[in-house]
Length: 92
Image 1 (cartoon, rainbow, N blue to C red):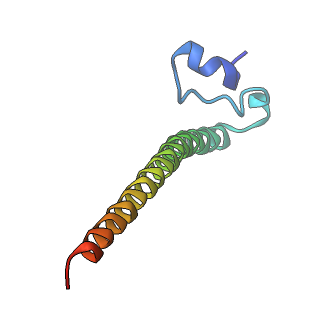
Image 2: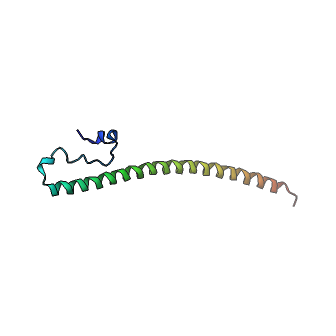
Image 3: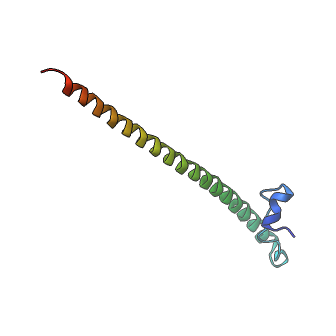
């Protein structure tokens, strides 16, 4: 049977699968409209998966950048402390 889990194996990502079990119950025009809607839904789902994967990647980048920013802030604080200590050692 032509089911979602078989679509990728068959190599056709946009092959309709939602309406095939009851295809005999629909008129030709209705079946054509369902096929169009099904194709659009498949594209929406594909785009959703792409955006979701991109979102995960961006979240990982945010975490990495936040960690880097924290380390740089700590180094800046250490440098500030050393500089203040040097300034305090200068004669008036």
